[in-house]
Length: 514
Image (tube, rainbow, N blue to C red; front, side, top):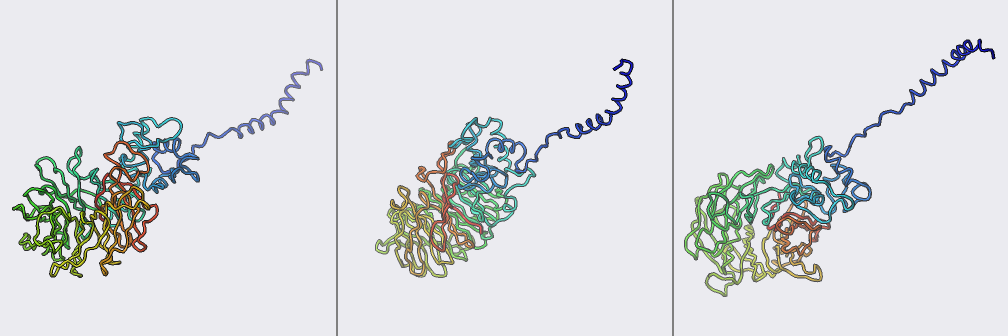
């Protein structure tokens, strides 16, 4: 081709190819990859918590989807709040009592640690990450939108079980419907000292809790102890009163405006205290001579609150007191065994608790040393029946539906059923005054009992002294092995499967707000 034609051909070719080139450029522009799409986190965790959980915990083969370790699903906030095979794993506002925190923590300065360590393989969480989890639970473990799991339930007075944990100065609050721990209420006056709460009762209107403390109540209270008053919805402490040493049980009147406290002190000080519970002030004391009462413990009163029955732990008798115009007026004593004659100080029986069934004119008294419940007629104070029960009977409760009394017996043995673990519940039929069943499988040393009438359930706390009833996981950093509670079906008198729940140390009493 002649060189002189080259420019013309180039122009021609360019004109022919221009549309093709333009289309090609448009095609490649249209096929340019879109920027990566950032998937929205739908777990419900706050973003900083989600970043930790989603990359370390909510993984296939661990705690995600169909393959779950311990039944714990961490895929979402709502799932983790359902708990695991072992109940609640997060107790809002209480990281040191939350398994979720305990197993992730490997830094002693941050709090309690549990075995096995999590994650089970690879690197543990950094201190910053663990602190993030702790802070989140400390603030109530909210959803990313600020929702608190138990917000609705905690505006109500009912639907809760309150278990008093004497070894950790706590009240464990359980949701009655789901059987999940909602909260631990810190009680007492001195955070750095164990004040040994001893007993808990609830006002008849279910609005208030009253708790006795054996140890000193704090600055300015000398060697005396205290009674505290808390609300059942916000858990706020709304009253404290200084009483004599060693306050034990509490008996409220029918409308909750008066309370009587027993004191199992060994000296000659106050033995009984009468309180105005609305103003939390002492109205009267039964004090004086050494023979007034011998270490009173159990209490039960008539509906008009004019007659009080007292079971003294250091006597061979029970006492009947008359109360008039907010004063203790008179006392009579009646022996537990008519053959013994006169009332006197004695370690033979160790009476612990009493229940008055006023309509039946019957008084039931549990006796630690003789392993029985003695029944007396309140009209003539005669001994009606001695009912053998499990070893070391303690607190009792009455079921108005089945007409049975349930007795927590701390030391009963049945190696065939529960090995080295001791304890049972004795069920007494009131009509026949006989023990109809001993219920086992309730943990080491049952102590507290309470009934949820609507669900026909009996709640039982067990002390678990010495850790004979092993916790689900080993926990390092609390004051003792966690205690537990169990639930009994009141229709079948069988322990409900999987009802075992770990709570604070040494749970010794409970109340149910239906």
